[in-house]
Amino acid sequence: MTHEPIIETHGLTKRFTAKKKTVEAVADLTFRVARGELVAFLGPNGAGKSTSLRMLTTLLPPTEGTARVVGSDILRDPGGVRARIGYVGQLTSGSFAQRVRDELLSQGAFFGLSRASARVRADELIESLDLSSFATRTVQQLSGGQKRRVDIALALMHAPPLLFLDEPSTGLDPQSRANLWQHILELRERHGTTVFLTTHYLEEADRYAERVMVMDRGRIVADDTATRLKAELAGDVVTLGFADADEARRAAGVVRGLTDREARVVEREVSVTAPDGDALLPAAIRALDEAGIAVRSATGVPPTLDDVFLALTGRTLREADDSGQADENDQQQTAQDEAAGPAKKEAVR
Image (cartoon, rainbow, N blue to C red; front, side, top):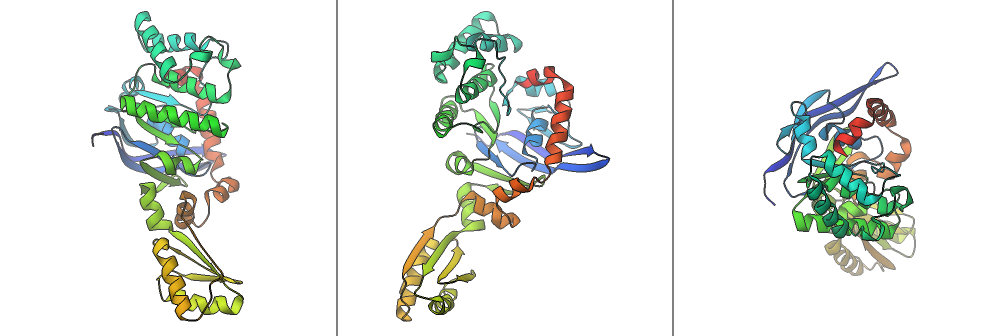
């Protein structure tokens, strides 16, 4: 991986007018992605993730700002962007009545590959993405996991250096999700493909992404590795149990002397969130023992990316999803995309 930027945005902004109100779906999006990175873009429904991807893939023009994707300006040279990227949206891309291999060949022709080159490339993808068992079946006969692998194959027919994935594993069972990620990781290892994806599955971003960007209400609120975000913004949750509430209150005073973080008392338990929970836990037990306070139970739970979002926004991702915040943004954006017709979808499929 080099430090050459494959995505570079400056002040990318998108506003929609809905019901005579102007809504800012994405505001001042400014970041760089280096060639070869695997970046996860997180946020609740309506946060602006899909809007951002659609601007970067030229499906949606920005209201303000600029971006260069694989060396081409998204406004001045959208065709150059589309020729060098793969895009997998939230809906199945393949024509349902078409056989998988024929669909790949059609995609190759769309990108200007010769028949011979398209056949070679289709066979490569069928093998590398493990499509051979259903390559002669129609897309409508496939399972959800199989369709997503076909979507990725379609996006890769022209061997793009950059692949956008919008919620690639949503709706898949755990085994299909694991298989899909195996193929994504093998793809990067073999070809050095840059992967930029949105996902609702925080454990996927935590486990696989080298970098995590968190979006809330149209703005990026965090951008770092998952490990650093969890250590600096969330921390381990240390919980200590005692015989009664009086003991817990006494213990809280001892624990507060060991850390600058707040020690919370709930009935017979004391809990504290700290970046060094693995060190705090044994230190707290020793200090409490010296103070003559018996610890009945002790646990240390490492933080999650949902804890990071809670620390940044005061609510969890699930709570933000349930609130339906900014849903109108995505609905308006979807309506505009649908009005553009199928040709626009085909342009970056």
